[in-house]
Image (cartoon, rainbow, N blue to C red; front, top):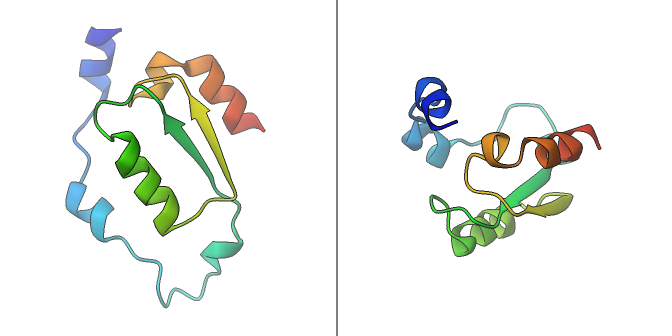
Length: 85
């Protein structure tokens, strides 16, 4: 799994992720149901950071999974269940 993850994972554009805004798009993004999947064993985004993200833009639902940051590797079945609900 480590070799596969190393081959597939790419660096995220951190600046773009931190500065993304949906202002003046003409699209009601708040009307789109959002679910935040909180990763409880995450070493990249600590609980406080995840909680701040949730507070800043509250989702319709928060689901906590006992997984690390790459939940599609560490908890694929549970993550799939969340996506299908």
